[in-house]
Length: 302
Image (cartoon, rainbow, N blue to C red; front, side, top):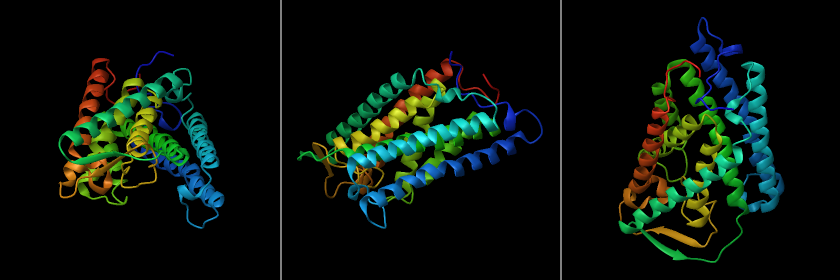
């Protein structure tokens, strides 16, 4: 299938006509709520496997947890596809399978490289100390990587960004979806206004840019997953304020007394100026490529 950018949807519930903007918003809310069901299944499954009333990824058997998380992620993908076919009466080209492996792997490499560059800048600026540590299992980190990469990209790119774009155009969609993505992280441990703004800009816009460029979600999933796994497991840094990813060969720690804008503090590299600059640079480059290819259009479909 030739890629012509994001397929916004123009049939079924999104057919042209009266109050299409409102229908798009209500459809987005419904999709978002229905896609929460597989998300809820992850902590429930982890709780049952770990034998604890409150889910802790580290307390559930790692291999089983990864399998359960992957099953929930596949369920979310399948559920989204079915809902789009029923409600919008179209094939979801944003989930086209043929380029999925290639684009996901490319995204994983890009996300890992981006985080490595950010960590390198932080080290040069004197914001972090780097040491080695014994490697522990990566199952929990992989499970969390699948959860965040797949679930969040379906929710914030395929639903929030796409349907805001359908309703109000690309500029409003980019800004609002990025803002909502940042707000969604403000309640994380060690968060504050700066980490939330940084997440909105460096991740909300940057990840949207890959979706806009390809018209599919796979590269966004890959970049998101590669960024998180490299940050949390490879470098042992907090991921959006949490330490559930750690266990890899390297340990990154903020230098005491250095501003959190330089070190990332307890939130991690995403809340540093280095992470912000890397995200802005990549996001701007990918958006420019999308613009060059005519992908940043208004509310009309390809």
